[in-house]
Image (tube, rainbow, N blue to C red; front, side):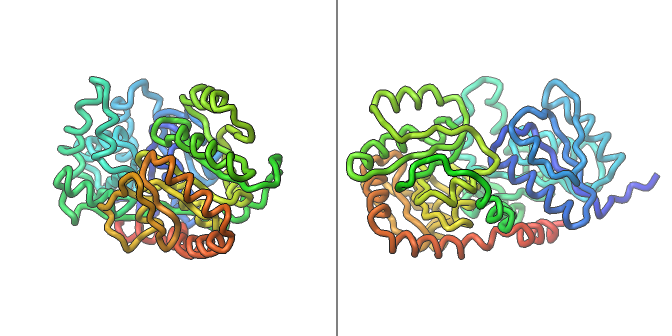
Length: 382
């Protein structure tokens, strides 16, 4: 049997479908390759999560049917030897480690791409459990054996070079893809069941990383001065904690809405998006809000927010508390700085002309994330 690769077959590997940014990126990439005529497979360790209904109908999904993630190695080796795709791509550290081990053991010609969506200096801080302590070591040892390490931002790439000493030519920076026309079309679909007043929007998992407690405390201050409402879209482990905070502050007009596969309708009907994240890779939410022309206030959390809003700035710069940076495409503030976030929300609420300027600027900036442009960059690697 021939060992030659199938140049029109693309394969992607996901741990689950939980709604994370990296998972959404992989599903969009798989859809993009499928629409361009590739026979596209999606290997799944688990179908758990919110995103199963977002798998494009042209994609063939394959359940690996194993109980532990590292048991995926052998079924993937068998799959590669049988199907011989031109490449396989993973996007989480566990999936990426598995794929590099598969490459080393399978001896197939399929290219292995590992996608990195967060700075390792941030990621490594989250490893508290004993079982996770080996992961940084494995990443340092194994990632260089991948055919290409794909960083989703320049800052993530720079961080890998600095923290892990990876060679620059091993890393390719490719931004997150977006189906811009589809996002604009979906933004028109929905029913607005909220008040007709200035609307602040937050989107993301209800977890520590997103720091929605800060956003709620900001809203409490803003609410004292203007008639406004806050909508937060997402699910997660901090829901009860955030509900308790809303009660403690005796707030009205705060809505903790569940996860939705159409946040675009909310973006199109809000007045400002506020991202209070403590760390990020390159936020899909910021890109999607920008596509719809929603003015953005974001914390300067070390990566994508600065790269999106201030692309000509020093990506290693991080604002200290008390600072505000009015960039070309939006407003950056320091993490956890309730006073300054409150200040810029009020400024945008009162200055419609500034909102219009930022709306037009960010729409122009986000054109570069169009799916066809991003797929072309991946095809250049294969």
